[in-house]
Amino acid sequence: MNVLLKVYLYLYFVFLWQDVIAARKNTGNNLTGYELLYEETISPNKEYGEQDKDAVYYTVNVYRNSNNNIIVNATSNSVFLMSLITNINIMKNY
Image (spheres, rainbow, N blue to C red):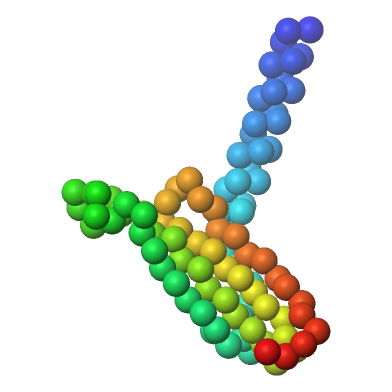
């Protein structure tokens, strides 16, 4: 029973790790026809790091197309934050 449990746990973590790698390779949506509405990049630790390569950057981009579909794309150079892409459909033109 103990060996079977170890095999199941091993397979679970292998498949979980494959999902993480696949999500990292996902480059996002095709933004053809979308207009960039807002872009902001911040670094919470830039002044505390010794070198610029140690700084962590978070970037948020907001795009809109002619059908009022909004895409919010959050990225970072940190290995601890995976890219996040959210699609929002709105009914009213702003």
